[in-house]
Image (cartoon, rainbow, N blue to C red; front, side, top):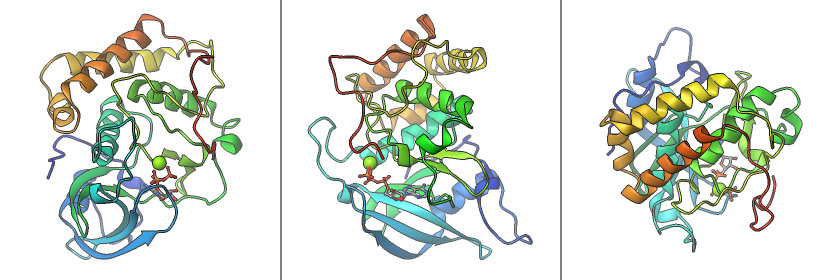
Amino acid sequence: MIPCRGILVDARSIKYSKDEDLSEDGLLELLIHGAILSSELIPWGSNYNFLLDIEGRPAVKVKAIYKPQAGESPLIDFPIGTLYKREYATYVVSKALGWPHVPPTVIREGPHGIGSIQLFIDAYPQPNYFTLRDDHSEVFKQIAIFDILINNADRKAGHCLLGRDNKIWIIDHGLTFNQIFNLRTVIWDFCGHPVPAPLVKNLESLLKLLSIPSQLTEDLRQVLTESEIKALMRRLHLILGNPVFPNHDPFRRDVPWPWL
Ligand SMILES: Nc1ncnc2c1ncn2[C@@H]1O[C@H](COP(=O)(O)OP(=O)(O)OP(=O)(O)O)[C@@H](O)[C@H]1O
Ligand SMILES: [Mg+2]
């Protein structure tokens, strides 16, 4: 099990009755140690994923998405059995930056062995990036730069959720942190625009954190290889060296399929 010390989560996204309360650390604790009451296969998606009911003490329940290592489909461009680790690494980096909203994620044993367990986001069913972008362009700038940083090879429009808490949440981060640059995203609206100054400041702070032994580097070392961490640093240096949203690359496929 991977400890999640020092990682803060936004507990306001969680639904539980008013008389119960759960601190942010309490939520991670629940995801890691809670009793798994039920597990139901989600019949879509390219891997075997499950919706769990998890109960902690005293009687606090949450829903979560479980992605077991054993249920991952092999891919030619990612080492086999590592996608669940990338889900966790994405969450860890988002917490260190302070944006965007990635649901709290842990690694633990579940009914089908080790895997990632991520808080289920109660979201409106219809909205997606294409319908949300006009009203949330500042949030999507965060997501666009974050996807470059984590080298996301699969940012589909449908994996940008509008939560019932009215926040934009992003999910599905198994295809990230490849050491070879492999960005595939539907978010190409900001080509040539400067990265907003406050985001650049946060990215500078992240670089400092990654440059010294820290909880962040310790957490990342447990799930990524040294080469993948070095590649993350290289991408961070590149963004900070020229903080402008990049253009399409005509020589590689840089959108996912399907778009939704
Ligand atoms: N944190 C979450 N909150 C709410 N729903 C989620 C969450 N994570 C995943 N889901 C749901 O589970 C489905 C499958 O998850 P996901 O897309 O991450 O898996 P995948 O195997 O990578 O599938 P895909 O082929 O769509 O990329 C999603 O389409 C979504 O409906
Ligand atoms: Mg996927």
